[in-house]
Image 1: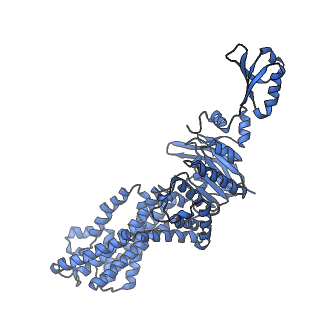
Image 2: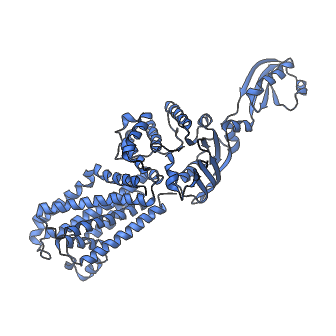
Image 3: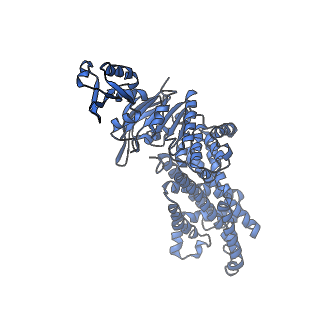
Length: 253
Length: 313
């Protein structure tokens, strides 16, 4: 194991997004703050509490997850694509680092960004609307797992992508719709039967509900189910991402 | 001691094109070796395989006796590479990038900092240490690329077209530096378009064309084996019968403007060495010599005669 190399690339990945925190940390806080203020001031008066929780607080775990997922995914996908486009990837591939070390460093970089963004929105919720945190350890564990899972998804897409357009397409056509349909803003119990069953096929639904349970102690599915779903995604995405990297798919000739 | 780089029967194809058709190459430790060939000959592919960037199809490569696939950590840690294409980075200063580079090769930051400083000073990059690559000039970018290949203090340095697009001053500086490194016992593998560069620096060269090595040897040896140096003697008073006693010397006579004016062109292996003998032969026959010209063949001629085209075509 090349520990020094592994640590160096991991730190590079983390310092990379901190260097551009205006693009990588602040926007999530601003949009989440806007959601909280706007929904808090307007919609909350018209929407009755869901599962005994005020509407603004109810959507907060979903907002946290939205930030975790998009940041984790974006970090890894864009770092990999950028390295490919700037000829840096070939420099990485000839170092005495194993493919597993390289791909895990990239995953950790994205996972840290996802996690930090999640924690920041969580703190924003606590300070702005006094959101309770019912199971703090569960929250941290869950945020870590989901950050890792979607950072791995970003690794897969970064490897497959050949242009920025490919990455944007994935976000616009798959990830964002899945997040919005995953119950960020509603409980699926509010949906007609057909849409409710369809939601159960959306992996992001479990992730949002898992966190909602950990934070608020309410949710549409048992925590164990959400947790297992997140774990399956983590294992699956990591295996595919590391596997593709190891094969050198679209990275090596 | 095992070879620094040993390549055996290397084959590689991309989709429908065959890039390498069985390359065999042995580079001894401490040798300055050149790989010459036109674009698309297989130079970069060969380097890519040695460094692990390109997957080999069949054959094998070992570095200091260890296989590049099963022992990749060892082999890659021995090599520093300066690729042909510039790398860029949007986030970090060149100093940070060099420290990272050392880290990837297992050198902790503490040890990397002085090493990076030394390399930056050597290449005139120290003043620019806080700049990002994209703000450097072309020449500075090339210096950075070569500096980067040296931060891990490699035993083998692989340079892919290091002087492409570089001004004369920097080229001279690089040449001097490479000679210095070679003097310290580093093995250097260089690919180049500049024949002059290979002639000046390399102890041995291979000419690679269409995925095969067409010849190999010391540059002087290759030139000599081609044997097409010539001596031109411009003279008056030449008669064909003068050559009766000359034996198997190859020459041709071309008559000039005047009746008795003309030139003799001798084809010899080593013009410098043959000159006194040739001049002696001609003057002994009572001819009047006006001028003597020597044309030595170069590695370029060797290249053209073996590949049927110029290196820059």
